[in-house]
Image 1 (cartoon, helix red, strand yellow):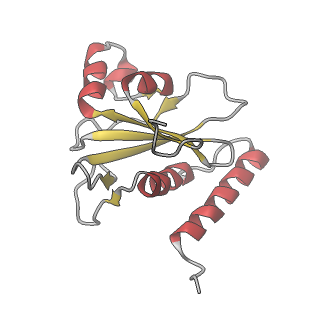
Image 2: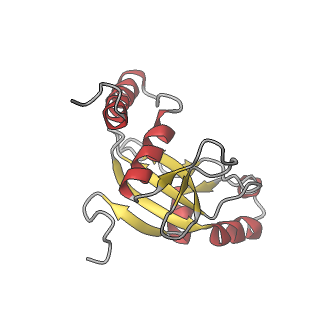
Length: 160
């Protein structure tokens, strides 16, 4: 018998609560999308959660490559005005790549994009805007710099 506190069950409840909160209040429930995205990225990309005693700057480890992964999220909704931005990249900390989980209005993952640190820092270093200097970038720019590694239609096998 499954415990009522199993992670998958809690995430499903968080998804439902966050979606209902957004519909009722007109704004996202703070902090929830990042937790949901981290859970989804680890599960869907078969990553390993960061050990509790590991340093900051990354959220998961790719067991196939040993890369330390920073996980970001963005809710992409039909009533969005465009120009969506991802949270600040932790440029002063140790990590090897970033995955960006794009979710629909029900907080369900639709796409996961991955970009290497070198590509992200090269872009940030080349842009003089203060926004880029702080490690903030648009979802559109992240898609240009990264690669689609999972989507809701094809899963992780993007070659098919």
